[in-house]
Length: 355
Image (cartoon, rainbow, N blue to C red):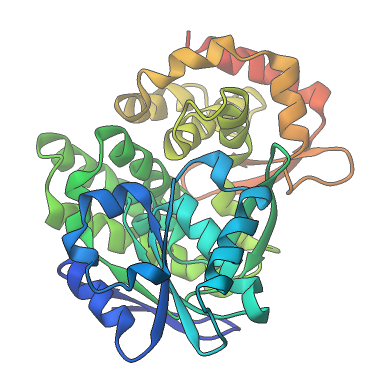
């Protein structure tokens, strides 16, 4: 069990053997309402039989539904179904459903108890801790959000066996990010794990190890900087570029894979401005490539002016500059503010590397 210290309240990541047992534990002794990923509801119907289906809302896990405009009907549904101050909200799904559920829990009746069962590798290995919700509005990505931790996270690695290969690769992207940000030893350990995983992608024991290693890294950053004012910013390595890649391709690139491509772009730019030695990008790209191909083929189609315009909207920016997390080497990330005019030729050159 991993316990996260938060200003709101401490919360634990607790392992569970099956989704059925996790649901039973979350529902014990409390009036529970649920938000459930629609695909999970279809695949694991028998494991969800402990839920009251009159109090359960299915959610399609896509970017359009992760929007302020689409959340109002969910709030209405919970209230009309009888949600009260002593009720609890159980959220079951990946990062999109987590964002929706966390945001709802933070504002419904001025804040209600919620628990989370993450069902994707990306959510299990990264987003399930950290307390953030990020919600889109009117086509602008992640412009709304709150910090509101769950009371408990239930870790059920057995559900990963029904994920599509691209969903596994997307989760790997965020796990890679955490290891690279943390330092050489975590990165070397993860590279060895990735080589083992390439021989057996369904190795649940190995995936559980990778998840727990990843969460242990993230725990250190979020406990030092829960509200993202300082060192936690470094966990956005790859995200400024990755979010733009997602947006301009209309989310045709899964989030974690976009982060991998974003980390490659950040490393390429770092090399061009002298932060890291020549060849650093290509050495890292050889590790990344099996996890992002063939999604890089969508990047040359990206219109550069539109790409830069999208980056300008990143919520981490200030003063007319774009804040990028660049690298001076493994474990040595740094926030650098750059003008759009500085970034345009560098991004253009980075995209050429993927052609």
